[in-house]
Image (cartoon, rainbow, N blue to C red; front, side):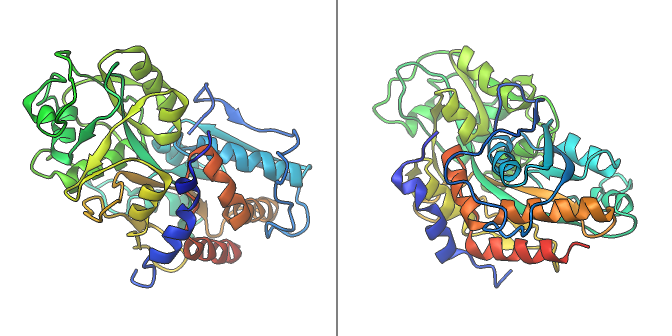
Length: 383
């Protein structure tokens, strides 16, 4: 997909606003992303993307489906510049990716939430398990993909829909059951809303997108969404579908359907996308409006761990508040020398400004320059 001109300016918008000093998909969601075909014209070369001399070997990753469209582009370009290298990425969901990484089955994990550092049941935390997998060395969360979550719907005749945090929370908890509910009508004056049941779809697999969406509901509408956010959907209504492709297909096939899904999947499936009013007016989802929300992020990790905290309750005018950041989770140390060299080359290529700018064509926002610089420094420190 192609972003609008406003979407292409998001990198500039975010760069000017981010206060760091204070601080996706193939049709088959389980398909391995690996290619040796030529990159599109203008693909960055190995040397121009900061990865130095061409590298060889095989790298395996697994996890987030939110970043699948982005990482597919990066892998294609990286392999074109490094013809002796193969990068396999299996989009199985953030939870599955972390489990496979911690079990030593893959070299890196893609996750839409940083590794958990606290345990609610006394068991080993995700961060502790990752440290054990990395031979006693810390695992780092490196943000490499930024993208908004669309509240997508299928409602023929309704081309413009506005939702507030409270109404959204009540829809996904089952408190609001029909499209002509008074609460929806009150914020959509002039719209003809049908007397049809709302059919909620959610991710049935453990998903960082699910966790980020619930973080938004809990942060922006705490009275209406009282359950703790997690990778499992905690609403009391709806039907689960696997992966981003599954929920997108379900909404597309179901009149009255609604779900939360990455923007690129919503656009790919020609779904309606609700405007969100956090209290400063209804905001359409664009690259620019998503960038304004990402601009409020602060680094909460220490050292080269670059976990970010997003302000889901932001009332910044023109900011689309439901956004996520996908991390590549890697060992700071602990891989063999060959894997380490290949991993560093790939991550450096991924973070390069030229490569990040290409992700706008896939429905993502380039990371701010400050974040790209910090990621590059962290990658250099991997040993």
